[in-house]
Length: 94
Image (cartoon, rainbow, N blue to C red; front, side, top):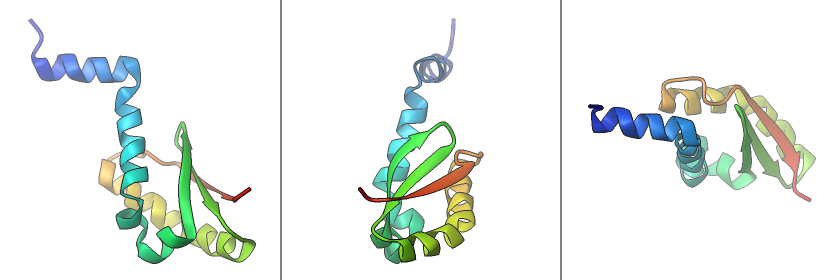
């Protein structure tokens, strides 16, 4: 008989709900992850595989966030203890 933890872990892996939970954690806690100033400038809007997409208002902010990508990736990956985010893509709001 499987232990309940094994059963739940297997269920989350096969349905993809585990990844969705982690993505939601990033979106819901963005302010504490990125810092208040960065969170005001850039907002996460999508996660595809290991790519996190951020949207910004203008090209000046885009440039600043591009310089912060490495720090943001490191913070997120440290929280999860694994490489959850391999790249951060910065886009202008439409």
